[in-house]
Image (cartoon, rainbow, N blue to C red; front, side):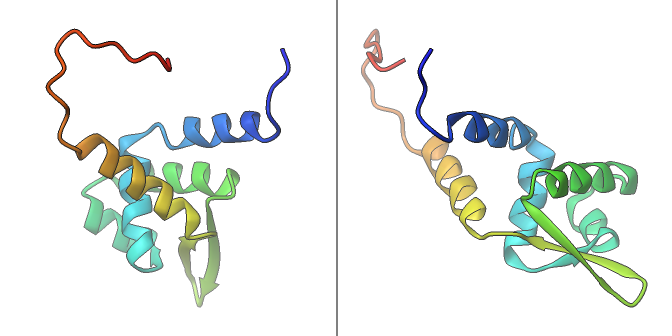
Length: 107
């Protein structure tokens, strides 16, 4: 099957974004860089879970980490990702049209 350039990488990106917890962490990091402790407090997730999600996001190139003293501070690698998440959120929150039985021809 012939596919458009970049579709495989885009599919991989969406797989990483397929976690509600990771999306929430990204939204927090879109407001300001933060360490694991701050993200744990702000997200309500456990510290091991936050660390695991941050590792996944870092390996995918979505966040970067820098050291300030002994603390690791995470930030978005590229703010385009924040726009992707914001656009997806806006899309799902849009009021749905009242076309009962209408089908989408662009599956």
